[in-house]
Image 1 (cartoon, rainbow, N blue to C red):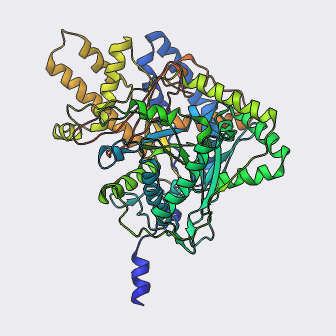
Image 2 (image 1 turned 60 degrees about the vertical axis):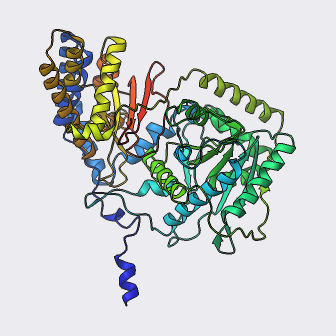
Image 3 (image 1 turned 30 degrees about the vertical axis):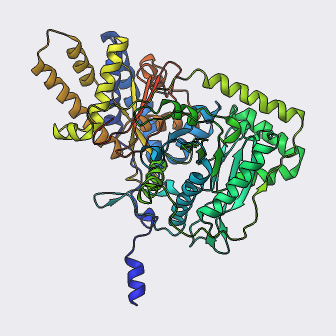
Length: 574
C-alpha cells in the first residue's frame, strides 16, 4: 500500500494532458482592433484610413461568417489550430526545409570542462550521447518533470516528438512519422544512426536490457570513425534531405523503386532515436564569439545530417557539439530543455565518465548500404550544389554582449526580454531610418497541444520612443516616459498572446476557413498593409528569446532581406 501511495503521488510527464484547456478562439472584434493597431507604424494617414475601411467591411460582412464557422470547428477539436498550423507552417512548404525551416544550436560545454581540443571528438561524443540516452529513458518512464508556470501545468506533448521522429517528404505535402512510445505504451525503437563521410551506420543502445555505457559507446563510435577514415567516402544519401521538398520526394520514390531494401534502410533512419553526425571540421568558438560554430551547425556538411530528423546531434573534430532539428514536430524550447539537462550533467561530472570502464561484447555497428545508380548520384550532387549556393547567401554573427545582463535590467524593474525587443527596434530604426515589422515568439502551452503565437513587437509606442531617441530636442525625462509606455505595451501583448488572445493565428484560421469553403480570399489579406506589416510571414525581423540559460539557437530569417535575431539572456550577459 505504501509503495502504491508513493507511486501515485509522483507526477508523470504526460499526466495532465487530458485535463488541459482547449485552445480558445479570440473575439473577432478584439482581434481586428489589435490588427489595426499593429499596421499603424507602417502606414501614412491615407493608407491607414483605407485599411480601416477594409477591416470594418470584413468585420460586419464575411469576417463574421468565417468567425462563426471557426467557432463551430473549435467545438469539435481541443486545438482548432493544430493540424492547420502543422500543414501551413511546415508540411505544405516546398522550399528546402533543412536550411530554411530547421533550427540549430551549439552546445555550451566548451565554456566549462570541454574547451575545443583536437582528439576529443569520440570520447566526449560517447559521454554526451550517454546523457542524451538517459534523458530519453526519463521520457520513456515519464519521469521528466512537468513544466509549470506557478502551479499551472503546461502542455508536454512536444516532448514526445524529440526522439524517434522524422518528417517524410511528399509530392505536395510532407508527413511526420513518430515512433516514440512511453514504457507503459509499449515498445519504442532503441537504435541510433551515425552519419560519417557520406556513410550511415546503425546500432542498438540497449544491450541485455540495459543502456550501453560511455566506454561501450566509445567503442562503437571509434569503429565507425576508423572505418570511414580508412576507406572511400559513401554516396551521401543524406544530402537529398536538404533538397526542395517535391524534388526530394521524387528522388525518394525513385530510390525505393531501385531496390525495396532501400525502403527498409530509410525506415531505420526515420525510426532511430536520433542521428549522430560526425563532422571533420573544427569550427572556432570562444565564450564571446559563437559565429563560426553556429554557421557550421546551421549550414555544415549536408551529407552528414538527415535534415528531416527531429534531432541531429552533431560532433566536430575539436570536441565541440551542437544540434540541428526539423522544426515541424516541436519548437525550440524542447531542445533547450534537453541541451540544458545534458550541459548540467557534463558540468556536474566535470566532463568525465566516472563509472565502470568494462565493455561488454556488443555487436558492432551495421552499415546501411543503399543501392544507388547514376541518377541518384546526380541528384545528390545537385542537392549539395543547391544547398551550398543557398547557404552562401546567409551571414551569421553571434557575439556576447558582456556589459550587463538580466541582473541589471531586473534591478531597474524592466523586463529583460522586452528590453532586448525594444533595443532591437531602435537598432533597426537607426540603421534603416524607418520601423521594422517584427515577429516575436510567444508560447501557448497553457492549452492542449498549444505551440506559438505572434507578438508584433513593432508597436506605435515603440516607434514613438525610437523617434524620441533620434530627436536631440527631446528631453531625457520624455524619452524615459515614452520608453516605459513601450515597455508596458509589449508586456501586455506578450501576456495576451500566451493567454490565447493573440490575433495572428486567429486571422490565419479565418483565411483557412475561407479557403476550405472555396470562397475568394477576403480583401483584408490582399490589402497592401497586410504583408507590409508582416502578415503572411513577411516579417523583416524574426526574433525569439531562447531563454535564460547557457543554451542558444538560431533559425534563418523569414524573408530574403530580413534578420533572424535569436538571443539568450544570462545574469551578466546577453
